[in-house]
Image 1 (cartoon, one colour):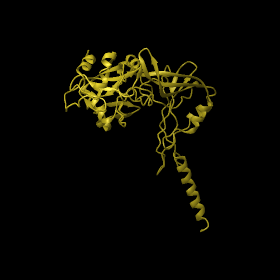
Image 2: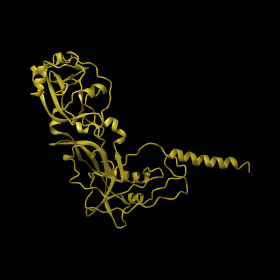
Image 3: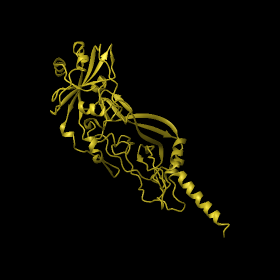
Length: 374
């Protein structure tokens, strides 16, 4: 009996080691999960449906709702098992990535890959049941980004397929392997939500910028990289950054100007995000950050050389006194020298306290305020 104990411990250790290495595998003998419904057939593949898990962030409330696609794209049906009599001829993978520019501006985009070939292995992989979590289930903490998967038959009918999952909720590798063996026959980017309007894009302006006082406090200029597209665009939250190196404005011969309107009603009201596949997302946990004030892009212009010549003195004028007057409009100025935009902007309050913010808050020249308000 004493000789068998090491064997039992070795087997137990091997099972534990395999479990930890896999990160997602259930213990042997655990039953498969049940209850995945059969998928509903629809007229077309729709990677732009607003309720798809990968799309919900860009369809959040307040993201230029007049230009999103929710009016023309209804919610997609829930993903499910492939119907027994459904014979697909193509698979479509929808991944939120990149952007698309058109006459209206820059849109957050979804990339759609079309894959064709022998879909038998894919159907077999999709027919596998999902695993139930086991007792003391060990799982990795990483989050898996899973594309939406659609199948289409020869007549154009489509269905949204459910990915079989492991005991940890990760997709089973058999589905990925089957997709990789199919031929990639087409890739296209489709628009989802207009993030930057054409006037703002042409002027190099962002759609949303922190107010001047807030920007000075957090070291945020308002020009940040969009988390969705990886390009200059609208931000959901300000990103504190170290204060920029003080730049000399001597010799500037022009400036591009972005004008913003502040909506006081949006200061502290937390937004409820839309329901996504039965899960509700709320901004309540982020309300301290969302209570910060923002300005929404209004229009843009350029300063004449005469008006721009006021900037060097204005950026080192008298310090502004303490002030708490309400702000409704401000300007974000990008000084230029020999046609090149400098990397350090200037913000000016057009009403309220009427301060100029460069490395600190200053009293701007009346002529500069007049040029901006004019």
